[in-house]
Image 1 (cartoon, rainbow, N blue to C red):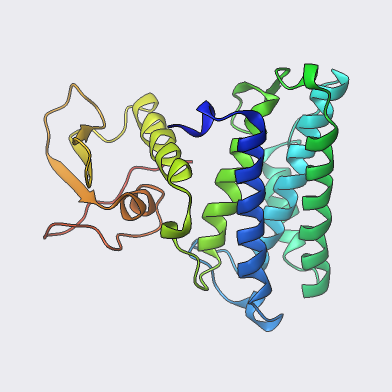
Image 2 (image 1 turned 90 degrees about the vertical axis):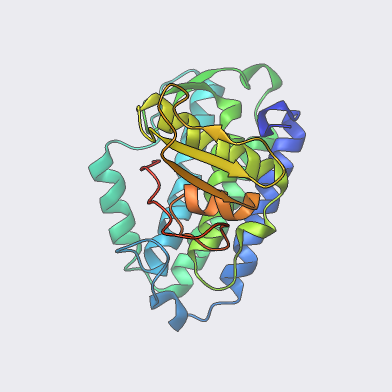
Length: 239
């Protein structure tokens, strides 16, 4: 089953579970630990925490757009988004934690109070896609579960609900197909039939293993726990 096959309440519940999972990982870090590195090149935990907080604020703007009909982009520009994260990373540890708590509460409040008729209103993502505002449940789900691993203090793809893992893999390989990436690459999840990323290309490289390990690799978080011998290819860029 895909995440998008679930009803809205179930999707929001999984997003909230992911937020709680991220919050748990965050609570285990000391203020000094926030100066450490993440799994994302060039980003400290401070950058990551600022990003996750400001992402919730950006999703709030999409919910405002849906509620009022007044176009409210997630970010003014890619440059503004990057500057916001860089500046946020300079905040005190207490301010960063408050940013996370405050924006999480705001997003949850807007989800709870959005009129039923507004959930199919079309809004635009930071990548320029027009989607129903209900897509914010998946956007936030993806964000908090993956970035909990990026904190680098014990978060595991194996902790994710299976529906999140399966939907992430579908999301990632779908993006590769749309961008004409991954030619010759075959994905073989344990217990499932192998799938070619680009069906018309001749198989050349195979990545196999348990679903959490394959999704971790596909999301660009390293080849850990994959099956087979030899060198694992680098995944195509996703986002």
